[in-house]
Length: 156
Length: 103
Image (cartoon, rainbow over all chains, first blue to last red):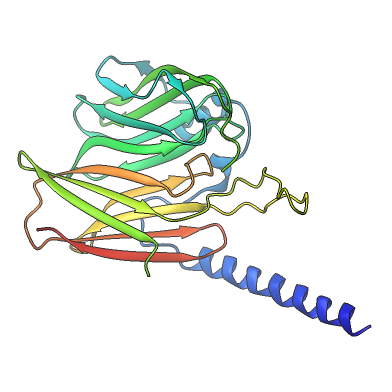
């Protein structure tokens, strides 16, 4: 009897703590340029995910985006990648993994004080294309590369 | 102790800023092997970097970023004494920040 009551109180407390924490998080966003939007990070297909983020704008392939990523990743949980670009006026860089449950890995908004350069480590569930989209003042450009994954990276 | 480490390095008039954050980055799809229950999603959603109080990078991310995220950026210029601040917030509302002064 006492135990169930205790468990109940514990649960209630943790649930309310969680909801307070998440509400606070939503009420006090960082003074940011962009805000985290759940809809961009919903599971789905790659094309839908790109269309959603860039609102259906045209994306051209570009050779001026350099995507450095291993062609064979032994461990899908940690795949290092570096994106750099010779394109001028790059305002944002997004990284997509085609066959991940949530294709969009990250979206970086860069101020003009920064070079078009981003380095990160991503997870890959399976062998798939990695797509990088650069948003410039004159349109959207993308580059892609196939990465073979020998061990899936769903495990953290 | 802060969850964020920041390092900077000067290269030909530019400053490379690297950061390593300790965070589980759980997707919500993994099972705890002991209890066979799904581990709830717990990942960083937003990361911002500012220089002397002005935001220069805003990053939105999902759980496809590896556990203990690492990022590197290249700052044009960068004077000794510039204050670089990095802060993050995750989907549970946790947050942390750290400051680093360029040498």
